[in-house]
Structure formats: structure tokens, C-alpha cells
Length: 83
Length: 520
Image (cartoon, rainbow over the protein chains, first blue to last red):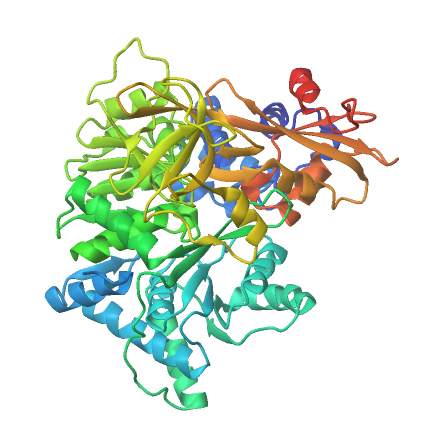
């Protein structure tokens, strides 16, 4: 997991998976379809990404296609960071 | 005099045939004439499929013009429509449709396989009107055309002459035994509510109403039928769009909505995450909220971003729909921290605050709010005992519905919500029986005991914590979350899990919820 993914993982563990075993949350664990992130959590996560990484998440990017796994979220954030 | 919700459609279709009755997003709209005609076709087909006055018709589809026209068509055939949560686990939807013995189900093809599998376990599988998709109404029209071709054109008839005492719809809510229960509501219930909205809010025929809540929520009754009565327009917001604050903030402005109605959770998300400063909201006249307490901090923040409209707190369980209301002042006092009252009794009801024996409590004392009037439910479907428990008859012979909500009254007829008398909670506007959550958790093979407690979070919201003991195998938070997503609607999934060796018990060997609440 790269540092971006690790940051996302830590946020999800602290905010929505209190008491969970961190090793069970992998880059490919389904988050939205797996019942870990609900709609409110998804909005909070996108706000966290915007504030932490200084990127803008478009409304359509809060869907499963972009946010369903830590790997996908990492990809979304990296695509928005200046290279 | 109005005899049913259908009279509203008939009158508006005659008066404003070319005005848009309903819009879908991103595209699609039907005028009153088109909506009337499409729902006529549904009526004729349903009748040909055997639907008669007094039957039920299931509508199991995403929010769409197709679903709305199907609901109207069901009522035209004299049936009650039963809207089912598209996103809920299939077993739950199948249970609902089987429980009230629907004669026909209008459903989307993507749901057919999952539903059939569950429905077959419960008995006979009813016939379908299957929609390839849903959205602008064309999918329903295509399905009806396909049936015309396959089964012959259905004879064109008239609307069934339903009266005020016929059931209009059955809305299922969370049940404490683990199975949802059906609240039966008549045309009288619905019409008396819509008429009250007309009196208090004076809607206009150029109004544009939001439909944010799903059709299986009682908020949808105002969203759909107030504009129907006034020849105005309703804009249907699909579930996915409805959860996305930045998109919602844009569409309220771009679609020039004049009436907004949703839970406080959505309004809070709009104010916090909607980037509302980017848009203008000069068209918006009313903001209604219902379903849960609106923390004042968030309400104030919303009002600061959106100062134009009048704000109303609308209160009432599904069993009565809105039965008290309170207008929020245009500028909320900076020092206020207490949530606003639920307000005074709506004019079509009479109310009392009583103790457990049904005796009026002293003025200002805490008691249960009970309601009588034309808005009170007919009963719970197929649950005579539960229905009997929900009512009591006073010495004058008046039948009162027990809301289960504890309130105080300020001496001037204004009620303040205090809490619940049972284990029902409102979370993000969803009504949840904690017993139903426990019942879902018990389906997990490694769960030995489950108890769910609701806590207030720092923001005034509700968090659910599940205390679990295992029958040997260690339980994992992540797998439990995944499991809950399969057996419970998403809004019932616990936020936090606590693992214990055994649940604490009272001296009578019941789960000690008091102790669990203290454990936090």
C-alpha cells in the first residue's frame, strides 16, 4: 500500500471500523458494496479527500466506480494530484 | 367532495392537460394528459390480470415516472399499491410482497431473479409486469405494449369507483419482531392530509415540488399528491442522486424547485457538503423537514446558506403521516441550542397527552402523544393484535392512536418531543426497530447473542452499537459489516460493534439494556 492508500485506510478504520483488525482491510476490500461505507460515510470520505489531498471530487465521483475500494480511491486521488 | 386521490388526477388532467405533471432526472417528463393515459393503461392491464377492488399491487422499482404511473394505475384499478424498497435485501422485499398477498407485481427486470428465488420460498409467485428499466415512463409503456401483443389488448374500462374508505397504499415499516409490518392507509387518510397541506401552505399551480424520499416512505405522499391536486409539477430525485449533496445543491437551483421536503440528515449534508454558495435559490419558497430531530446547530447553518424560504418542522409517524407542525422563525436565535418543538396539532386531528392508562397527564407533564381524526391509519396488515395495541377507546367512544412518542405540551398547544416509549429509533430519518436489527444479527452463524443500543453522537444524530457474544469463533467487524449489508437494509447496519463474553442480564434473565447503555 502506498502512502496515499495508507492515509485513506487509516481514515476509514478510525471513522467507520472501530475495533476492526486492520489486516482485514485490504486495498481490494469492497467498501460501499461491502456495507462498510454508507451514503453519509461516502460523502464524508470525499470531503476528507478534498481537504487532506487538496483535490476536488466531482459529484459523480462519489459513486461505487470510484470509491468502492482503497485501491480505486487511491487511483482517483493520484489522477487529481499535480504530477 | 373528493372521494379519492384519483379525483386530484382527474381534475388536474382536465384543467391543465398540457402542464408537466412529473419530471425525471436527468431527462423525461409527462404532462397531466400523458400521466393520466399511461396510468389508464396500467389500470386496464391490471384488471385483465385479475386485479379487483380491494386487492394489492406491488411496485418494486427504482423511483421513476414508471413507478409513479404504476402506483396511480393500481389505485385506478381499485387496488392499494405497495411500494417496495429497491435497495433492500431481496428476502425483505419478497416477504413484504408475500405478506400482503399482492395480486400483481410491477418490477424491474434486474430484480426479477433475486426476488423470484426468495418469493418461491414463501409460496405462490404472483404474475409480473416486468420493466426492462425505469426512468421516464417509456419502460412501463413498452412493457404494457409487449403484454398487449402477447396477451391481447386489455379492454379499456373506467376507473374503479373507489371511496374514501378503500385502501390507497400500504407502507411497510420496521417491525420489532424482525419482520416489517404493513401500515394500511386509506384514501381518506391521504386526502385529509393533502387537503390540510393545501390549507396551510397554499400551493400554486406553478410550484415545483421535490420528491426526495423514496416512494415507500410516507414523505412521498406530500411530494406526489399535493402537486397532483394543484396541477403543479413534481421532480423525482433518484436514490443515488438523493444521497449526493453537491449534485443535489445544483439540481435544486437548476430545476428551480419551489418546495423541498426531506429529512434533516439530507439538509445537513447539503449545508455542510453541498457547496451551496455556488448557486442561487430564489425560486425556493418552502423547506419542509421530517423524520427525526434537526439539531439546531445544523438548522441554523442551513438557514444562513439558504435564507429565502419558510421552514417547517413536520412531525408524525407513518401511521398518521404529518400530525403536528411548527414553523421555524426566519432567524434562529444565536443562543438557542434546544431543538425546535414538533409544534401544534394539525387541524384535521385532535390530540391528547396521556399516561399508560390513557388518562390525561397534568398540563406540561411528560406523556404519550395520542391522535384521533381522519388521518389515523386503518390498521396493520394482517396483524389484528398489533392493531388493537396501537389504539385505545376513551369513555366518549373516540378511538385514539398511540404514537409511542413521549412529549410535553407548553400550555399553548405546542408539543415538544422528549423520546420514545419503546425500542424504536429514528436514524437519518429512517424508522428502525432495534429488535429488527438484532434479528438480522442473529442470522449470522457465529453470533450467539445480540443486543443493539442507540446512542446520541456529538452532532445530535443516532449511532447504533451492537453488543455481540460469539458461539466460539471470533467475530470480525469487517465480516459483520459485510454480513449486515446482505441481511439488513443499509440504514439498519450498526455503526459500532462491541464484543462481550456474554450479554449482561437482569434479575429476570432478560438482556440488561440499561447496563449496555452505561457500558457505552
